[in-house]
Image (cartoon, rainbow, N blue to C red; front, top):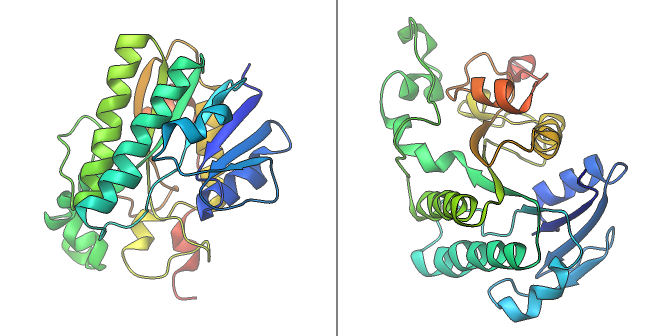
Length: 252
């Protein structure tokens, strides 16, 4: 049903991965402050709603990646590049009748849980201290670990409002660790890794999910032995079926 897809922030790592994984099945366009040569892309600043509006015309679905992806960014940077950009994108999607909106949220919306046991032991690699544990679910209260997480939690809240007020289908993906190397680079990432192929699976599942889903929040992480986030609702509601496990890189 969704054939014409706009990716905001397409020139970044996640945008590149998704373009490669989706472009054979969907018509992809982009909007980004930087140029992107692989797909028709409007080069414009998403903080300026007027300058980016034409990118949203004749689009079925938006994948919103536009943000500064650093948990250490100061508030003014988060406000301009994450909060304002998200509002502008959602509002233009609404005005132009976009049917489904996929918002790239972040695991940092609940990052403070990693200070608690057993999660602190897991991300530190102290596995012998962990006898059994329950994973962090999307039903648990948000606990951002910085302004970046605060900005992403705002995006989730704004998405829920647009879903209920304007009957848009909004899907928020709390993305784990995606890196250029596509493998764990430290102990924490054995729990948090989301491989490139599983990222594409997650987004494809969101694109193809039932139209009955008007709003949902889903963790995006590979099928890692020590993952700390629960993906059961991702599996049950949108059919996400990750195939990779960070343990394959243990000791390499």
